[in-house]
Image (tube, rainbow, N blue to C red; front, side, top):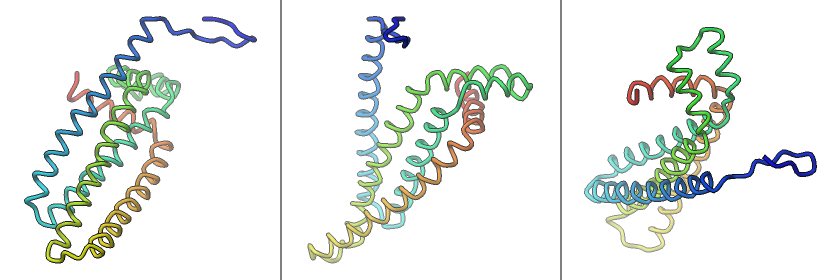
Length: 193
């Protein structure tokens, strides 16, 4: 800790800097790997599909995108004091309390995984789905201008719906961050004890 102009400044040790650097490398490699796997999967499935399956996959990717952003934002905006009050009032079991604290203390990493990795990859896959859906819609007509028009309409609808539902989800996440963090902690304890 160093004091500059009456302001306490925390200096990062070499070990902390190294740990942060490796975290960035890990999360980047995770994003790259997941992106490749999910892109191959979506392209293989969608190329052999009809418009209904393409729309269903598009909706699934959009829902994952919206919910991952919502959960990431809720964990980032939740305060440790709120969780402590819940524990002091005996509304939380010890295991759930510890999991909540763990999520909040690691909110930068959790939100990177949820918002950046899962959310952004699902956003990209929405674009892939939109392109393939456009190809399916116009497969009988090879007019280039029609392709551009339908592609623009499909992409605009997807973008509009995604932004609309993300805005609703983010508003909900900020207002209900404590409830969401507690629910996610309970769910994560089922899978990761």
